[in-house]
Image (cartoon, rainbow, N blue to C red; front, side):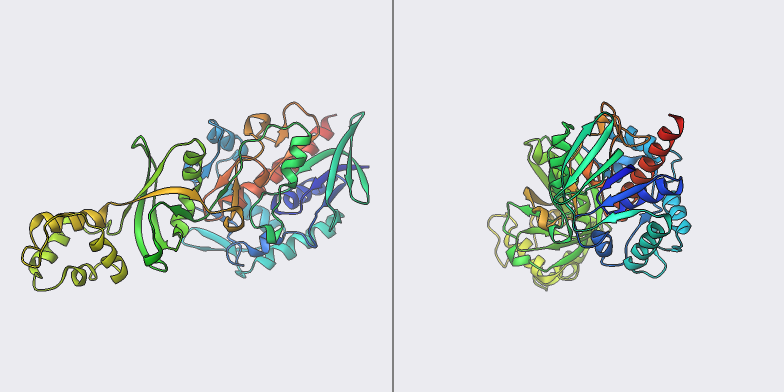
Length: 413
């Protein structure tokens, strides 16, 4: 008989096991892959961006959810308002010293393997059992005891933690198994969609594929409401747009599309250069071709695209530098509009948006409100964050809360 059976050996499941075992609880992790933490090894291109110092209590800057009160949920989950410090302290407690680069926090080795080696060594020291290559098929309840069944074994536990992860990165273990188990337990789930992914545009971007440019992007709904703003590097692709800036916008755009609203991005290619400056450059260099002048500011492929798609009638070589035409070109530089029709699929997404609804979860310990002994953590819940360590922060802290919450419950019983 185990105090806790944790289904899923990712960041949240491991954090839960370490926290609970430190408090003397008997734990087992069941993982369907051949090793724990396959996604952790790949996090941050193998460098494992564990958290970020750019945190405030305005959590809607970093996270998305279908639950209207999700920022209140996160306030209660993060408790002290310093989730980055809590992550750093937790990692230090297992022997990991961190390193900061522009507010992004990594293990000092800059290797994800450092995190996983420390996790595995801690689990071994604390006596946490693991079952690898074991897929949970069913969870049953019998007189206050949960029976967790895999293909070949079954385990009895007083508490079960669903830490199964999401649909993203199937090659690293992403699957719908956790949602199936949640549905079998009659847990309320919201619609699932990819997040931290590229965006497919209505416009044909094939001719600009491979072009990268630092810019500012603003997301608008069909009702002209500003939904989100990001700055960073944009990458054009054969399907639309990509890059970290676009990934960070994908969660909110997915929510718009999921609500059957149209979604638009207005791109400012030169957010730090004024209309007047650009106009002056055109005006003083009217011996040059417009594409050559634009190429002083942006990639030549993009220059050609803007010129070819600038809607201005009766332009000839003789009047090409009239004020109206130059103004229209500058407008395109500052207000390049794209319609987003779809997100890329789960195989090309870093996280899953949607999941077990937050309104049925207690944020202080990640327990299910109406089902004693069932807990849900990490990506399986209806929270997804932007790039920069925010998803790993949420996963680890939600696991810590579950492990401590189960200990407190057992202690008080």
